[in-house]
Length: 328
Image (cartoon, rainbow, N blue to C red; front, side, top):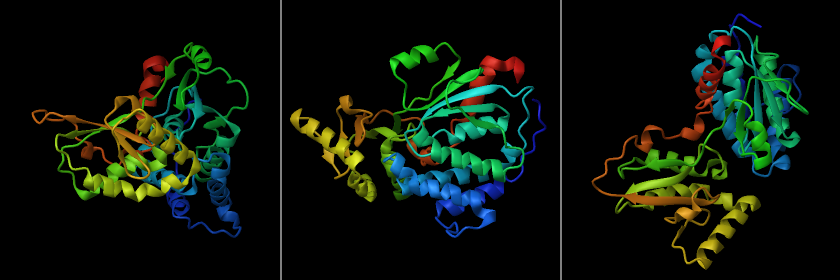
C-alpha cells in the first residue's frame, strides 16, 4: 500500500489531549467529544487494571504525548511514504502508562502497519488512545491493529516494556528484533540550577521510577551537596502511600539494614553507593567521580527526558531501514 501522505488534524488532536491531561474534558455526554470522553474514562479506570497506573501519572503521559505531537506535527504530517506498508509487530508489556505509544505513532505516521499484542488489562487505555487518533487524524485509520492471538506474518518486532522470559525470548530471537535498554545515568557537575534539579527529581521518580527513561544511577563530583536534590525528591514523598511502591521501598530498606549497607533515606526513596541495588524500584544508586575527570554530556543538557515520548521513534525507523531497506 503506497499511500499519499498528508495527515491532517495532528495539532487539533494535541489540543484535545491537553484537555485530557488537565482534566478539562466535559463530563456530560457530548457527541462531538465522545472519543475524548471515552479515553477520559479509561484514564480514570486505569489504576483498577494496573495499580501502577495512577490517574495523575496517566495524565502526565497524556500531557507529554500532546506536547510531542505539537512539536512534531509538521514532521509527521509530511513524512515520505514507504514503497509498501510493511507489517511491524509490537509486543507490549508496559511498565508506565502509554509506554510505546510514541514508538507506534512514529511508525504509523511513517507508513508501517503496526500490529500490537498487549495484555487485555493494559490494552484498554492504549486502545482508547488509538481510537481517538483514528477519529481525529485524517488518514490515520487502519494504521494500528490490536492482535488477540498469534501475530499474522510480520517483517520485524519491537519489544516494549517488561522483558520476556527465556522461553519467549528464544522464540522472538528468530526475527529481526528491537529492544530498548534502561537504567539511564545522570552525570552532574554540581552547579545545576534549581530547575535542573527539579527536572532531575522528576526523571528519577515519575511513574514510580519504573520506565526505561527514568534515572536509576547518579554520578556526582566528590563533596557533592545532596541537600537540594533531597528537597526536590521530597515532592514525590507521597509515592510511599501506594502499596505496590511501598512494598518495594520497605523490602529494599530491610535488605540494606540486614546487609549493613550504607544508605540515605528520603522517606520514599533510598540512595546507596552499593551497585548491587542498581535498577531496583525505590532505589537510586550513586557514585563519585574524581575531581580531575571532566564529564561529557552533562545531565542538564537532556533534563526532562521522561517528557519525550518520541525519543525512541527514530530508533524504530533506523531498525526497519537496516533490515528492510529494499521496501522503504
